[in-house]
Length: 151
Image 1 (spheres, one colour):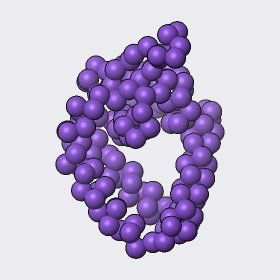
Image 2 (cartoon, helix red, strand yellow):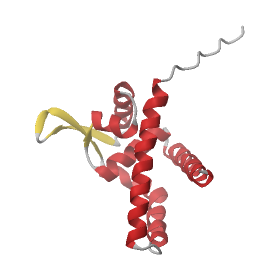
Image 3 (tube, rainbow, N blue to C red):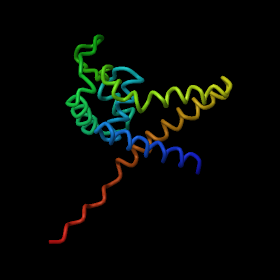
Image 4 (cartoon, helix red, strand yellow):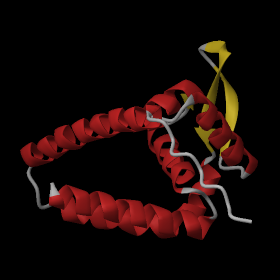
């Protein structure tokens, strides 16, 4: 558990640093990750992936659309639905951060067998689902009242 906590903590810190460098919030940046790797999805699906409420997802899409990172478009299979997609031209801005990580991780993962990699995929898929469940659980908890400022 200590190793997992350290890896997770480092990922959070790295995400915050990159988000600061490109002028986004960490949750907005992570949303771009879902969209750039998974392709266009509905706002509802983004909510499922992130564990964010529908209102939070709508505000996030509005921010990212305003910054021209994403666009809304009609679903070609159901014109009543709206899809959210990452604008690929914006990937160039993120390349200095993620390009070297992708290249380095390919080299690092090459030392493992297909069977070991399959175990990693199973493990991290399970951890993702568990983390998403925890996000939903924690969001349902009452917020601590804000302190009143002293005059």
